[in-house]
Image (cartoon, rainbow, N blue to C red; front, side, top):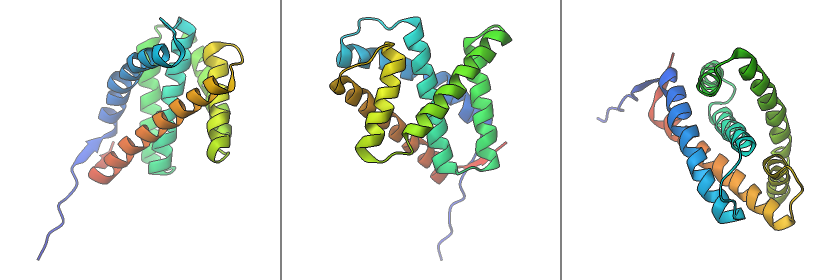
Length: 172
């Protein structure tokens, strides 16, 4: 007779903390290197850094919603995650509120891009991310590079979320 091993419990506060402190911070370092390799950018600006933070937050949010559906626990996890990021970046509530409005605007735009399928979705999200990152229209090759970057980022976050979902029971 085989007994099914119980999954260990994992607190959503710990997940949110890890996503904010390890995930986003590591993503920015990796993005700096990637921007240099893909686009020949020596150092990204403060505005470009902010756009990347928003996109990385979006990629975690999208992945968690895909894996955990629209469950109550995923909503709580995402609320904690966003609050941790805002508190880590901004000292003033006014700055955090202003940034949150930008986040909401970008999320809506990125969600619309991902309603498309296949290469259309890659192109749409690449175009949107390029527009915000570069503050100008880019050629098709750069748009597709950015779209592939975006999709690979989202897919890797989805694999992380699936691993958490398969191996742990989330608790508050």
